[in-house]
Image (tube, rainbow, N blue to C red; front, side, top):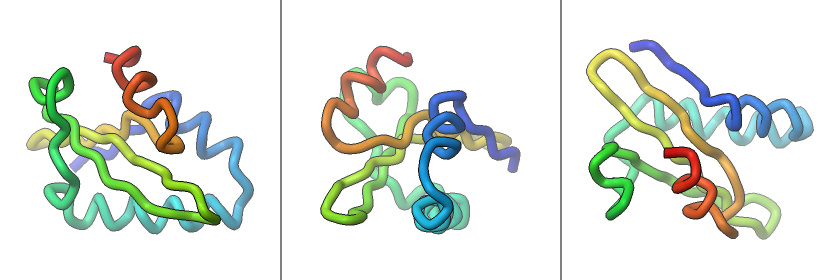
Length: 92
């Protein structure tokens, strides 16, 4: 399976410190190992089969949005909970 990262995900990963990057990478690896574990998002994201998972780090809740097909996994957005869905909506 081909793993792809949207430019916003790449930008997020480039900005965070190495210590935090390792934590995010651990969650990404868990998603890659079991892509169906994330929750399918409801309208207006349902038709795109976008899934999300979340994790807490230093008192903040972060969410990861991704989509899976037979051959590809695309990570769309990693960001804090605040305004997450508005940002995701602007992307699609």
